[in-house]
Amino acid sequence: MAGGNIYENTMPFGAHETPLKEAAPRRRHLGVPVALASLALLLAVSLVAVATLYFQKEKRLMELEGALQEARSSLWRSGVSYGSEEAMEGLGFLKNISGAFLEIQGRVEEANASRAAAQERLRDLRGLVSGGWTFFGGSAYFFLQEAQSWTDAEQSCRSRGAHLTSVTSQGEMQHLSQQSGGQTFWIGLTDQEKEGAWTWADGTTYDPGASLWAPREPDNWSGAPGNQEDCVHASSRWNDASCSYSYKAFCKKAVP
Image (tube, rainbow, N blue to C red; front, side, top):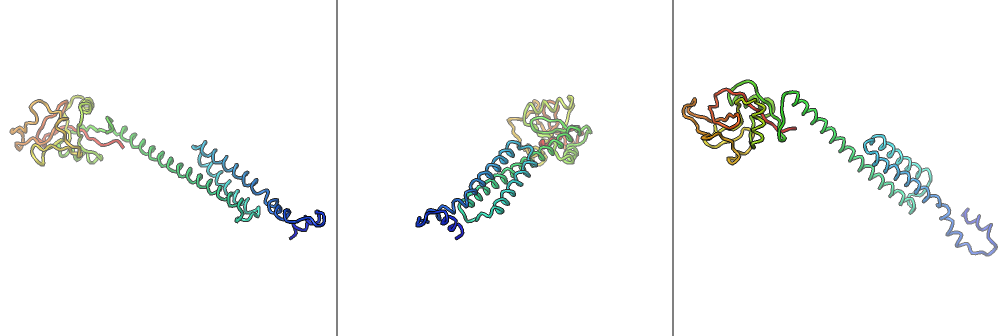
């Protein structure tokens, strides 16, 4: 081998050649670990920079991706055998860095999706506010100013993506009373399907213990049209009435 001949010319006659032949491969690859360590340091610094400047992600991610490509190109240009131990360790490190890069990229994409969802929610809320909706306890309310029957009021609420309001607390009832200015309005409580079996139009479970009936109500007054009072209106307390009567009403839906 050429390397052997060089050392042979510099040794005294008869010297043993084995140590020189063993040392030659180590000298030939001496720069590989140093180069890989430098590349590792460069990539690690780039990774820390990406994590630190998380919200400047697009530029930093592109820089890291470029560094990874440059590292791969450098290994290829160095002519290092990919079967050597040093090269395999370096490639393993690069794979770890690539994995970290992909993880950060995934988190950035999740953050972008969350930000887009938040922006959309803000647009929806602004639309509700500009449309005359009010808010209480995680729900949005719209006061229908046109007096109409309970059934027509429920249809008007559905056209707005809502239902006639359910009422589950004294605080909610106070909010509605204040918004109505003391006027009487329909709420979504009815027993049209079965007398005495009260249900909310929006599917909320009726809780008798949380009801806000006026004294001696409901009474299903026989003098009402059709001899039935199957729908509920309110101002500060509840009263059953004929569903054919005309009142203003409150619609309710969950805040998006």
